[in-house]
Image (tube, rainbow, N blue to C red; front, side, top):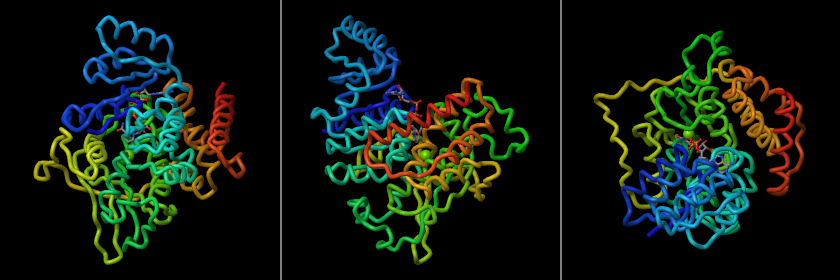
Amino acid sequence: MKNLAIFGSTGSIGESTLAVVRQNQKILKVYALAANQNDKRLLAQCLEFKPAIAALVCPQAAARLEKSLKAANSNTQVVCGTDNLTLLAKSDGYCTLVAAIVGAAGLPSTFAAAQAGKKILLANKEALVMSGRLFIDTVKQNGAKLLPVDSEHNAIFQSLPAEYQNDYLNLDIRDFGIHSIILTGSGGPFLNQPLSSLASKTPEQACKHPNWSMGQKISVDSASMMNKGLELIEACWLFGVDTDFIEVLIHPQSVIHSMVRYIDGSVLSQMGAPDMKIPIAHCLGFSDRIASAADHYNFIDGCDFTFKRPDYQRFPNLKLAKQAFKAGQEATTVLSAVNEVHVGAFLQGRLKFTQIAEQNERILNSYSPSSVFSIDSLIHIDQHARSIAEGALS
Ligand code: NAD
Ligand code: MG
């Protein structure tokens, strides 16, 4: 039996995780569920999955949840606030964390789980982008395990040799006959729209991804390809390589989820329907295979596969992410932080779609690299960058 803590349980990844748990109740048990403020959704999840603990950041929502659980004679205990979420991440009651909080808010709990030697199924890419080497070293030093849920990284992982998979954070990918990694991306909803139309795109249009159903922030990041930029950085940290080792390729159908080129010319890939239940089930079952309840991809009735190179004029955020990784940790922390602020402002109608990348670039260019040593200093850099971004908006 694997005991799980699902952080971000009310979101898109959280719900997909619970759908996989529903299929595998003999081997997967939910110990804790955590979210920001959606007490209604969390209540329904608690009544179905009966976790020992439910956590909400918002105190009012936590009080409502507690009252409703009591009325339903539930034994689930409610905790509240970000500090308690971080404490919960360190608790002995569970072994596997599904890190599915969106954005920088996920870093403290994910980092705490690494310090506590947990198995971390990582969806929250921003946490890794913000803390890079420190996070990977913390995982290694505390005997924690890290498995990538993000579909591309999961596909890369699945396409690598088993011997490498078993201890990948301590091994050099180049020792396994690997030539390079091909990171695929759909190009999002604006791939074929006239460049001149991008400035007037609405949040609704940006969130309407052609293949995936996801939370708002990652949907906007997919439309601007900042998502691919964050994923490029994520892949560099996970697989211990530089950006030059990774080719970003647009594959609008999202069936090939990424690929690995070997030195003999072979290319291995993982494919499947664009459904996050597949990589989630892979991680939850690893190294066994378990059912995911996702559709099996039908090649006969499916689409033709096409590919193209990303265009930096259309997707300046992708170039920025590459530059930030080369510049160092502070730059990637700042880029992730200000992008989160700018995406939020776009969703609120305070910025145009194209201004997300313009503002990201402006603030990134005003930063000079420094050495970063601790999680607290990274969180400080994140917050300082956010205040600069917020200041420029008002
Ligand atoms: P979402 O917006 O649907 O859900 C976010 C979850 O985080 C919710 O449960 C919310 O309550 C919780 N949350 C938000 N702010 C919080 C805070 N301050 N403290 C605690 N909890 C908080 O997002 P999502 O699409 O599920 O994405 C979650 C993460 O997974 C993101 O980092 C995203 O990049 C990554 N990811 C998502 C997908 C996908 O298909 N949705 C794919 C790959 C990676
Ligand atoms: Mg992805």
